[in-house]
Image (cartoon, rainbow, N blue to C red; front, top):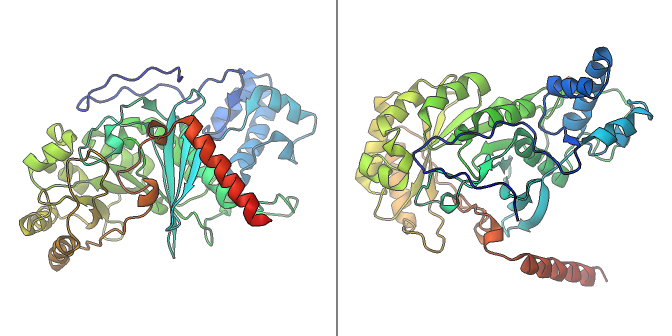
Length: 419
């Protein structure tokens, strides 16, 4: 049983973030994942190292954590052997616990993960011919209650820490074998640690589109993404990172100024009445206010367009008139925009149906004719509930015993295949 109480927060009230950068551990050690170099240095000093030594060790450890992806202090070959047990006694290099990993027939992979205090959340990796995108969660649950979204039916439990957010990226790199010199062979070779890039790798892009509203966990998301973008660490360009918001207007300018990543906006409707219904946050920050914030988003340009996500709901928001109004609104606010049309992914109890392919194509054609790109997103991972809007902790649908039976069956099948 998880020992963190639910945050009792209705959808229209800004959640109070959990003011911590580290999740306490039962063994008293401190998990270094999610911490910037200066914070690691501070912890080393508090643990008894002299300032100069703490600064040197923090630089070394930071490089091994975020650039090399090691999970054991003994692998840090440029740190004295006598120092490594001192580190192991006081600190730990964590990863989210993997409860279950699923593979879709289309190559999509989904992980059910668990925090140190027992809460479960999900992440998804979506491979394509020219890129691989990791969909990262920012909260356990969600507070926005968007009516078309399965994830939105969950209660918000708590914000994820920077370590739990960046840990998803590191876990994905573990699974894909994409750390530099993943075998740890040749570590003594010269290497410019500040210029590691994702070129030629499977994981090329990150989208903050998993469970939760990233801008309601701004500080922790910012801290995690700074580590992802750090040239001495994970070193992923900000141009390869997209943050999706349902429209937390007061935080959007700060997102552009302080994080600087691409922006995606969950629009989904072009009238107050419909958006109030399907995205209740609209009652607090309306369409006009939201689009004004988009127009002012720092760094937005024709080269870095804002993506407007639009889930296609049959007979709700998918008419020709809606398409024309969408074009009018985006042009009225002179937005450098593209529209992602998303076929609705149904789930048991959903109040809506999926628009027909013909209706989706007609909607797309109208937007294209208006001079705005409007591709239709190909649904991915539907067979493992990993498609857009489907993320909802699998533990609610499966018992631990059922998962254990499935894992045992899979192991048996693998053993039989190898004979």
